[in-house]
Length: 187
Image 1: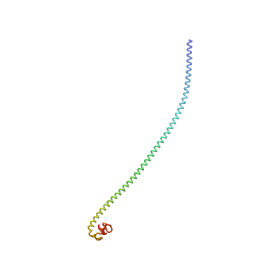
Image 2: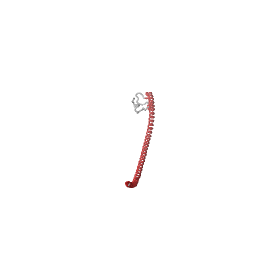
Image 3: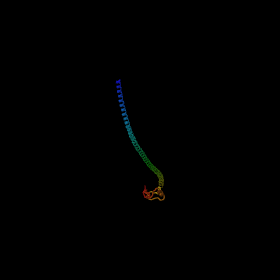
Image 4: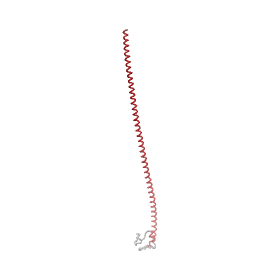
């Protein structure tokens, strides 16, 4: 039994040493965990603060970029509006010019049509007058043929003032007119 007691005592001492060693290990592990936890917490807090700062910085940058984009959009819309207004103004100006040219052309066409109508009327009057004059000339020529032996005797170099004077004047013939009548020349 002494041997058993010694073994048991030895075993008990070994267990006590092991227990002490385990307790020490637990103590150091707990201390390490606590240190790591505190350090971890500090790291987490630090990291959290860094992330918050980064988030705020990114938010500010996003707002600046959004503002720049909005400003660019407004400027583009203003430019588009100005461009559209300028185009509209140019279109309206060209439209007014076109209408003015159209009115001028319409007036010119009306004037030309009026001139053409007047020219036709004058031509018709001249034609009618020429026909009437031709008819009158034919009548007077016929009368002249009938009256010729009476007022223009053969070999006579002067006018027969009694019969053909009025007829010759109506035809535009007479002394000095260039017809040869009254000059002594016969044609």
